[in-house]
Amino acid sequence: MKKFSVFIALISILMLCCQCTTSKELRQAKKGAKAVPYVVLDNYFVRNNVDCSNRQRLIIDNERDFDAFFGPAAIMGGLPTDINWKKQFVIAVLLPETNRPTMVNPLEVKQSPGNIIFKYQVIRGTKTSYSLVPFVAIALNRAEDPQQLEVFFIEK
Image 1 (cartoon, rainbow, N blue to C red):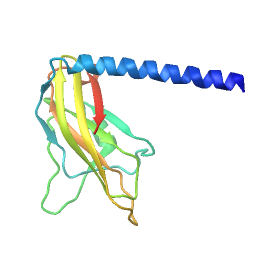
Image 2 (image 1 turned 180 degrees about the horizontal axis):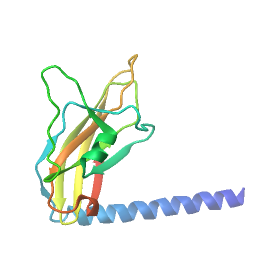
Image 3 (image 1 turned 90 degrees about the vertical axis):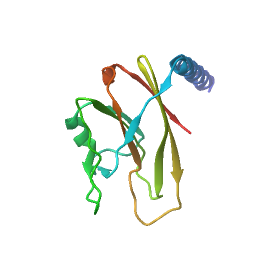
């Protein structure tokens, strides 16, 4: 029992240290961060072969990877938002599959050298008889190599 208590205490300390490091990095990223324009991607769906058992936070910089996660939605009168992969990249948040209508709304995107801060809000409805995979995807202009950016996802 004593070993288990010591193990739990060590894990708790480690988690607090990691959280402090992330908070410190986030505070550093916020310094000098400026709002950047973004485009919300409309008329897409999450493909049914994507594992949606956990929250996923994605940085996608090419069409092939994007197509592995998303497909164009056939909506009357609406076309999927066009993405210019030479000039843009995509940041997305996929939530676990749920039977509650859920909206994921982007609130703010800020950028400082080497960092992006993406704030979003999740609004959940009441239970239904169907399930869905809630997500939000936004396109940002490429200023740096997207894979070299540190992205902070903040749910409000």
